[in-house]
Image 1 (tube, rainbow over the protein chains, first blue to last red):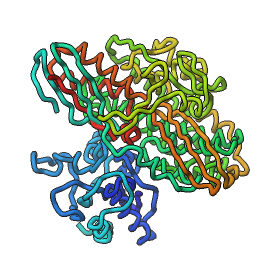
Image 2 (tube, chains in turn blue, purple; image 1 turned 90 degrees about the vertical axis):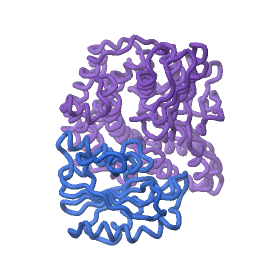
Image 3 (spheres, each protein chain N blue to C red; image 1 turned 180 degrees about the horizontal axis):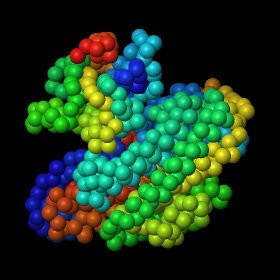
Image 4 (tube, rainbow over the protein chains, first blue to last red; image 1 turned 120 degrees about the vertical axis):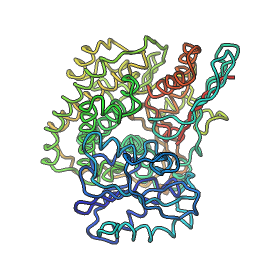
Length: 162
Length: 435
């Protein structure tokens, strides 16, 4: 789901039928319930659907499941900037893996948006390390516990925090 | 990623297929200078959604199955609705049918625009991806993004939102859009039709390999219109049946390498659904703008060159815009917006044309209205054998090529059919082996 508030877009990406892949959708759902400023426009399963939804806004916050070696439920907050890749080890160089199970990653969609002059001025990825991406319903316990903290982080970003 | 050397015996593998929805792998084995085996492999717990649907209410499949694919949720919703309505012998009225087709046109527009310009065109223009294409030909990418947005707007207007529409229910819609909401789409759709016509002209100018394939085409056919969600299932070999009859005529086979079920048609294993099939069977039903565009592009009565599917898909983009415009101009809001669905036992099947090809659903429902059995046959599972045959030809013709170039050609051969691997396996991965 993609809550919207003024010059800010918050996009929860993923599928709730792929276990922890649904964490972005769940965080967005919590946000929509917590704030009347946030408008729920539906879960985004394909990052390309960001195009047309985040065009030219000041800040886009993308919440998605990520794969990583850290403990499940670990939250990463990353400024996405495809022009500032620094090579191996840089999260930007591994954008595909950051984009969980989706075929076209958020960073590639951002590159495309920039190429046609329709990109947000700033994109922040709030990534929650997932544990299980099998077909099924329900977040794993550690990832489920991370949802309130991830939602709070997004609200802080919306309120101007960095 | 590829492994191996340029030898008579070699194995090479592609670990991921870029620009294909979902995850897939492809593997080819070359032995003594000849192609020994070609496999398209699908990983993913099969039939998860079919199992999930058992025990659910007969009204739930449109919402649940819409989540199988982020690109074609409407296709899943519409096939589910048709199957459940078929179980009760119900047919919706002309107004609801038209509104459904308008929603479906929105999905065709956004899906075809995405595939043609952002996923497929880079193959013909020497670009690695849509970002490089945007640097080479920014207007082409902007045109596609505009088309996608107009498609999304159509879906939002009819379906409530463009991602997993919420206004669809078995029997029709929760709420019919107001006349002025639908009327506001007309101008956008005229613009979209012009953009689509420009897209046909653009893709028709690409260089295509000179390839012809002996496909058995299968598609819905409706004498009244270019079939999207109506008509009977026909083939170029004379098949003419309904969804239940077609499901009885195919065998869904589990092969060890694939967690999706491959579909085989009795009498001949492989068959192809999707734009090439629809065009071959339904060219006469195209509206004047799409037919004119097809003629100008030199497509002829049918097209058996899989690489030129990008042109056919562009023609269908014109048709979807044109059909949508005709529906908008004649819109009459359905009252009521849905027919009532009884709580009763029944068995029904339904088929519609997803952007990628024929999508069938079948449900058995108990007296309590709960589903006892669900079957979903997506287009990519049906096309898998034909895609493998294409890949075999590409590898045979490209044995002397370096691995990286052959890998790229194989990826292109797969993309020709716009496979939605997350639908088929419900995800896929691609690998090629020479050894």
